[in-house]
Length: 409
Image 1 (cartoon, rainbow, N blue to C red):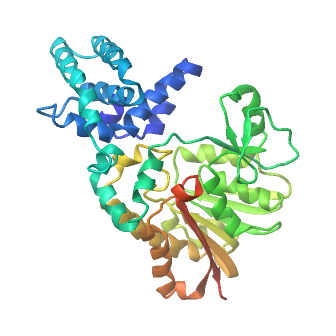
Image 2 (image 1 turned 60 degrees about the horizontal axis):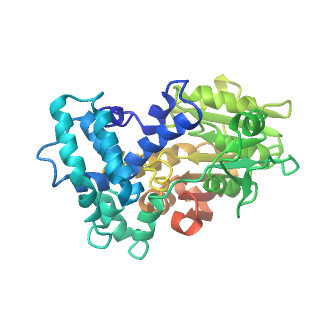
Image 3 (image 1 turned 90 degrees about the vertical axis):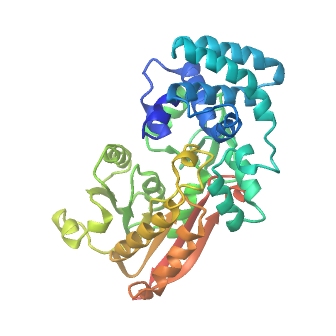
C-alpha cells in the first residue's frame, strides 16, 4: 500500500478501502497501522535518509524504508536489529538482489540517523511535517505551533455519536466531555455491537468537532434545510435529529461515487414527517430551475455549507494531508470557498440563516472568508451572529471553523 501511495495519486483512505476482503481483524489492523505509521512519520524518515541516499529511491524501495523507519521509531533500541533483519528478508520478495544489498546497508545506518534529529533544532523533521507548513504555522500560531505539530503526530481516537440517550449502550464505549459522543475501545465488536446501532440510524461514526456547525445552525422541527457539499451525510444526521424528524432536508453534492453513500445515509432518516431529497450538482452551477425541476423550495430557512478545504484541522486523522498539501493550496481553497459562500447565500430566506464551516484551522479559510463576504455587495445582506472555532491542541479533537450568518431581510 505504501508503494501504491508513493507511486500514484490516490488518497490513503481510498487505498485502505481497496484492501482485499480477506484482510479482516488483526490482519487488517496491522496493515493499516504500518501504512499510516509510515505516512505519519515519513517526513522524519525522509530527513534521516537524506544523508544516506545518493539519489531518489524507487517507490518500492522507498516504501520499505518508510515502513521500517516507522517501526524503528516505535520500538525500543534492542528490537532494532530484528526489525532490520525482517525488513531485509521481506524485501527479497519485492526488490532485486542489488536493491536488497542497498537496503541492508541503509537500514543499518537508519536508527542512528533518526536519533540525531533534534526537536528543537529541526522541528519540521522531528515532528514529520513539511518545512513550508511548519514555517507557515510558526507565523500563524507563534506560541502554539509545537503543540499543533505534536497533536498531529498522535493516534486519533474513533468516536461514536449516539442520538438517543435512552438506547442501551454496549460495554466498551467510553464517555467523553462531549454529550452523546463516546470513544470506541478495542473491547467492542463492530459486527455485534456497533453495526446494529449504525444500520438503524441511531448512531454515526464522527469526531466531536462535527457537532459545532449543526449546533450553530440549530435547525428546528418543520423547517426547510439546504445541506450543501453534503456527502456522505454526517451533518444531515445531526440536523435531522435536531429537527426531531420533522421538516425537509435537501442535500446537494457533486455527481460521483459519494452520492451512493449519501443516499444510503439519508434513507435511514426519511419518514412521512421528514422529506429528504438529493440534488447532484456543482454548487457554483446550482440554479433555481434545478430545484423547480424536482418540485423543491428555492429558498430555505437554514443553509449548511460545509466547504471543501485544506484539511489542516484533521491531519492527525488524515495523516496523508501532510503529503498532498502544497503552499498554494490554502489560498486556492479560500478563493473557492468565497465563491461557494456567495452561491450558497442565494438560497437563504429573508431572516433565514446560513452556517459556513470548514475542517481547516487557517484564518485564510475561516474568518478571512467571512470578512470578505460581509464586505461584498451580496454579503451586506447578512450579519455575523456567532462563531465556533476548534484548535485541536486546545479542544482535544479535530480542528474546525464554523460561522453563523443571518440574512437581514
